[in-house]
Length: 118
View 1 (spheres, helix red, strand yellow):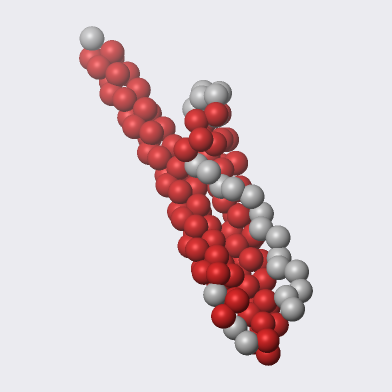
View 2 (view 1 turned 180 degrees about the horizontal axis):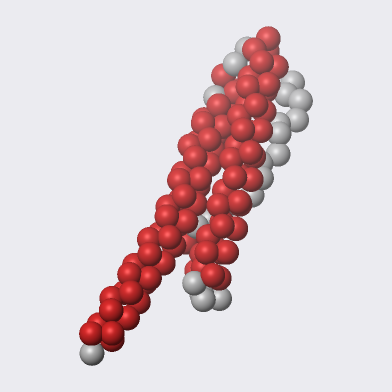
């Protein structure tokens, strides 16, 4: 009977470790998506205010916005990597259906740089 209790205790510890590992993978993906959202908001704000700029400041604004878009696209690639790690972790734990992952963790798409502004 004592052996069974030890086995149950070990199984419970394994389950707890699995849950912690899966939770951390999800948290890291969530943080990566949050970084994307912050960059998206900053880019969208700058684009919304571009019409208020004088002609001589448009080129500089485009450079700044495109630099933000490049940083956002790098953050996007990082989020994709974090999503991959979450999927691998789920697979290792025996979870095979990942449709809810994409519904819950929306990463979006890469953003294209601004074309020349005149």
